[in-house]
Image 1: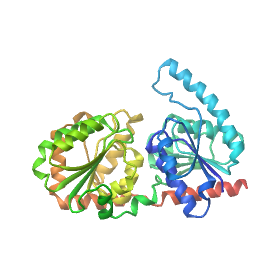
Image 2: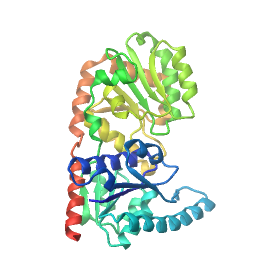
Image 3: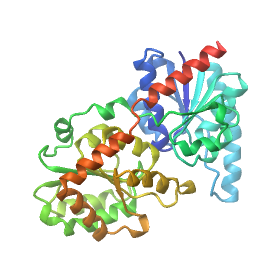
Image 4: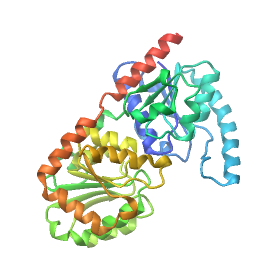
Length: 368
């Protein structure tokens, strides 16, 4: 079955699309050459999709919300151009279904597919949907949501609570082998830090400040740290000057190994990140992105905190002292980490990809 998967821009949108593609292949529904991703040249998909050996086609698309008047006009022009580019791709590929995974790159392709009479599905990762999915939700054939709260934003009769798709590799890695991937010691307590695909300066700064405050634990603690491009050099130098072993990179492609190697994780609270955390049951210190639409990351994080699966530090409260205190608490309290792991795994939905594949197949059968 030929499938177009449209959207991206960030890892939070893209990785569920990759997870869905993997499930289609695993189930024998599609071959790799029958799955085509559609995105933009400046989204994360331009880096990631070629590494997974899927076809990738580009269209024009750009952000609208929160932009200047000039950039809003530019976004509307790009939408117009992207619509005709999407039509050309659809006419060439002749997919049997189109799946929008969020981000501005999905709008034109899903609209084009709908006008061509193709079955259309969108994935909504967050509790508060973004503009593109709120618009598309009125016209597509099915909406797959991660959270119960999202259902109220869409027509109920075609909205399904599936969970957020996660890549199969996330749950299948071995801790020892994963540590060796990063030239780290499998016997040491490992902290994985990342602030999203572009990094997060507030998290980077707090980690940097905390190193001196937990230096007495350096004999048994090591770090994996995705810094983003901007802060990479400063963080690399800081780790070199400290007593901690660390693997530091602007971007980590081996995310499954990083998750597996970690004993605890420090990160934002995007829906895709939380889906992956709960699938593997890793204790986490969550630092919600304060400017997320509708405050959805704070809502996402609070769910895990209320269940005892994570700790939370609000971005405005984040500093080295606060972070060091939380790190010590988790490092020293085996019982707390064990409880957090159990509660985290209880929240995980590892069959989300399978559920969405079933929705896609049912829609194609209805049309076909």
